[in-house]
Length: 507
Image 1 (cartoon, rainbow, N blue to C red):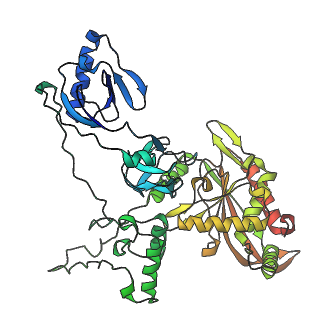
Image 2: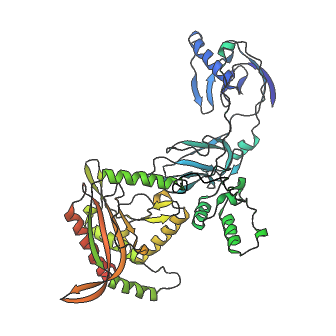
């Protein structure tokens, strides 16, 4: 390490000046940098010198002493900028155009291992934790938490090689003032740092992992009353489990994390304002998922010319086959449900009627080879449609296992973008709620969605005799630009054939 006195303009850290003494690292204030660059522009012609890009570390300006009135600095030079690896926002899925950066799991100066979660981003459907591309030290964070509208390829942070990040010595600079007030750039005052606030505005918002947020929403827990044990007070799954145990009385309250009491508003003094009782209401802020869903469904209903076809399917044979499968079920098996039967039947029907496995593509109809069935799932944060890919090539048991795993991850908020994008046909089943028929809104860019109702016993007339049978209404909502009534009717006929003859599906 050496001490040197030289004459040159300060440039941002990472830029170097090359003269008789060799390359020297420099750092400077915003005013000094701006003033130096403006002077450089004015004297460039006289010096017959152009800056040239040498390497990622910066520009070479030679000789630095040629620049207009120089400044003298005493500085200590240890090393060049550390070697770094860029963390950029990947393309999460074709349907994801922009995301929001929710929270940094590591801060500048923290050590991180390759493959370790470093930042959490939020799409319109789920939260995704991005992993560090290399081991080292978080050298610089380029995007603040809470930033929205990020596109694929955006630079999020730099990770320095561990040896470089730990041993780099800051440059010590003692500048002499430049007597040129005209070149001074007014420094903008830094605004106050805004802490994220809770929905009520009473205090800082709780920082929690995606799973913790889903668990809290499902259980009706207020995150602001839970103390997180993670880094920076982050609430994790274990904190939610502890809070639930306290609420159930499974453990003494003293063993739980201390909670913050929820303030109770005082009773208003005096008579109640006229009309306040009749006009009282509560307003809930929509999650990002619900906002995007609302916007897309509104656009779909306005832009897509819907038409609807309904058919009733007999499900007695399918229910009997499911009962037999349940009796033979082993410990690790997943018992298929009627929803799984509909998914399997729809996939095989789409193989027979491929025109319905299609989308509208700016004046053309795009027919897909792969049959990817999207299954609508209700979650605490909104509706999401995980995908059973190549469903026409899978048997009922495989579909049941995959669907069950996808639904579980959807409700935990841990689906990856690849697991909920790329569907070619959607199924929405509200039969478990007692709804007998459903006229759903098409999910663009798909051309069809199947609404499934409850299986109910009804009188059936057959061969001039009345019997009792179990019927399930299936309603097809379709984009009339892509398919017409005949194609829709052919698809429903094929669907009913598979449902009413489960042997065709291997049952």
